[in-house]
Image (cartoon, rainbow, N blue to C red; front, side, top):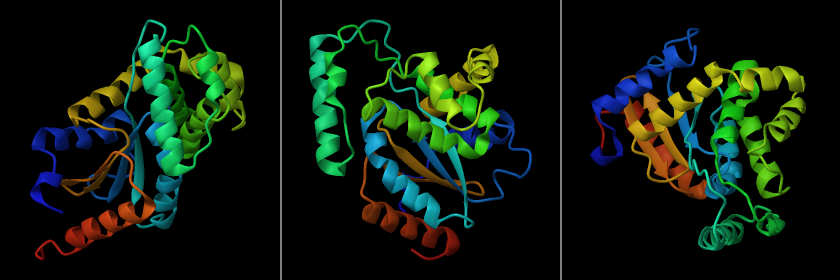
Length: 242
């Protein structure tokens, strides 16, 4: 991986702080290789990328750890206008064509939808603290509910219903979800994403010791991702070779 793939020291410090911010006290984040995935549940290309990420993560299980960072794609406070609706629909069509992921276009019959991704991101962060082993699965269920099911995942009741599929009581989820703590933790994720200067979702990094490698920005096929991953790991395992 070339020098442009590495991020600067300040961004590395941001990653090192993860073990404090996300209660990773069981192990040292810098001692164990990690696959870092930056995404947003209401990002259509992240939805398209989900099968690729799942396959890559499954194949690397036991070889490196996984860390999810929520990006905060949109924080709109006004309903979508005609221009935004048209652009969003085109994005969905592009993702569907490239990835074959299903979309429910009846979403565009909505007339007052406010595209704010913070609640969906906060739902995933909440799951991180309630049931951490299902954090990524929660993100993917939110994606499916939104894109394939036309469910309003900006609504906390809808998000609680999704959480209940993991055996979590809806009231317990909502209490945690609406807490100042979860709002703060979600903003911490957004801050990390900004510090990483994320310009495209999804983004994937490898953190190994004190070196951070940018693996990919934007959607890629599994074959492309796997090749990038193999090349990065060769450099990590054989640092003296080019």
